[in-house]
Image 1 (cartoon, rainbow, N blue to C red):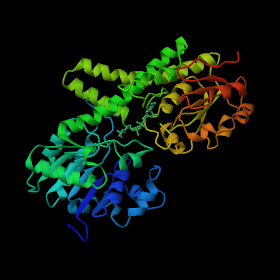
Image 2: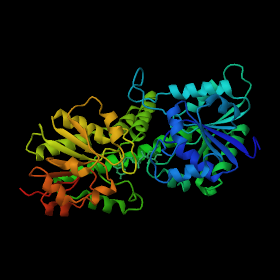
Image 3: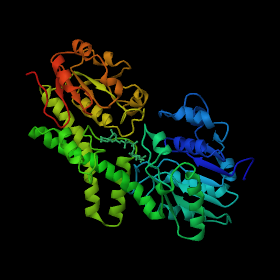
Length: 460
Ligand code: UGA
């Protein structure tokens, strides 16, 4: 045991969306390991230590409470914890670079490098360093060079263990994952480190679901997994445009296509487009990698996935404009949902941001509602005028010319749409960006209904 009754000490650097839930589950499942999550942000750590966790994730709070103070700790003492760690997970953010070479595509690695230097300066004994953040392929090489630079005699073994959990389902994704991927060097020390990590996951993950590969395959598989998922969404969304002009129905097409077991049914829901912190970032990362190796045709192929996603919002706004008599000036638009998907307050790269900017360009007035994302929405749209943020969806819709549904929150299905209709300007429109509502019922109430990838239901 490395300290007290613990077999090993795990430290996770970065108390965000990835580090927090992942480490909580490891702590739950491995009571013989001490798990400490460190972060330089004191307010963030204070929140993790309080009843009001900094992220909203169903089931997370109970699981934090189960282990916090026993084998799960949150701390700002980064250096001290690094010094005591046997195993370090690097969970810092790797946003898309906004400056210099690769701006808009490459990953910004400044936080990873700073973290590596901090690990190098503070580690006192041989340590396993695990890339959990999504990183460019061959990043482990750079990490290793930094960690082994200077005259620190400590040996670091680097593993890649990408995260596959999705927000909103993070807990079940972690508790029963499709697979756990671990990339290591094929050396003796590499394999020994890999076995240590396998041992952790083996506490709850069946062995056939723990995949081991070389480091570069693991790093690349993470990017490719997200690129494939996003590609499916852009594929079905591109077809939704075809449906709208041919009177085919995207749900019927998706169902028929998805029944082929080689294609499968999942991730074929057409909508306003994908958002979240990963899809766009990871595809652009892949594009950058391809361009770096002069694989321009491959880069162009993947770029198109992002273009279609942006096009989907543009198309949606254009449809609103056409339907509402070619002018939105001064019209109140009720935006139902701002989070990039339900069950999260996260608004990173949500299509609702683009929608808001484009509607403001048309000089519409926006009234935005969301059960969990209003605070983030305010930050995202800071400086943009003509927008109000309203908790109650009924007030949001009052006096509005249309509703634009952006997030498939359950509660939007059970609202009293007759009451909403009665309070709106006429003719009243609903643009359902997630095909989430009962369109026939809305039409019967009196709405003009515009789903995605289906013919509109119109009263005129
Ligand atoms: C995604 C992946 O699903 C995870 O496997 C991965 O670990 C994670 O990124 C990551 O790299 O961190 P996440 O971004 O949380 O997870 O959300 P998803 O559930 O994948 O949804 C992404 C977006 O696609 C959402 O905006 C959602 O509304 C949209 N979507 C999803 C569709 O428009 N249609 C679909 O059929 C499915």
